[in-house]
Image (tube, rainbow, N blue to C red):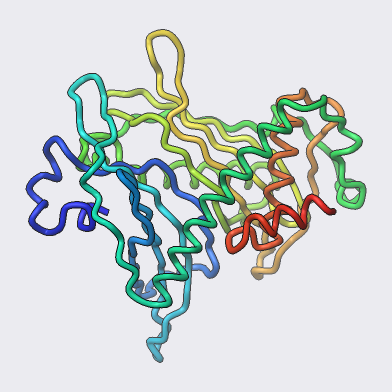
Length: 321
């Protein structure tokens, strides 16, 4: 994103008053595990550009041995904005520095269209979540999936799934804007989502397969005291969705700096998907938890209809069901 916005001649400005910052990471999918010793190739491609925004598609491949053929491991979209620093008052977006995007070929055009669909999909999901929250009171019996509930050994409350952690960051975690690097924050959140999933399933073989979206609401400074909370919010056959929130301590009250929904899968000892024996108790849940459950259930349904490629079509299929 920096290279696209400023070119190689702009490199000296990267650490001064103008830079780029991450505002979201969407549609992160892990298609195949990386193994110890694998050769890895990572490619970033600018696929969309606005007045101050830049969308980057990141693709990771492992180079299979000995053929050296590429195998897609993961892909995601990162959305950045060009910013101008404003001292202690914070940062603000800076228009006019992003050049127009020139589509190079058919593959580039496909990535461009997919990035637009990805953002549209996230906006539609957010709108649906707001509708659920502002509509009539949610009824546990209507949200419950009878077939799945019958398979559970027992059910636990949403509150009991909470895991938390605190930490300080160090100078090695700073980015060019002298705030905490977004990748380090996501790494910490993902590790804790897996930890929450392992405690919930009572199984160590729980791994991340995707992240719906990660919001970057406020930058984290080196001096900040940061806390994290993770909760299980939806359980299907072998997959579990976990909400993770990161808080920054402020004089009046904590503020949310980051929020993401991770999808983890339960495996057995030989790498086969394993049904999750625990469910979430909807009957005792408050409207807030029922809303989280309903939103996650909707995301799961949409993702199964390939929302990443055609969000409007996916949502229409889900609504008909």
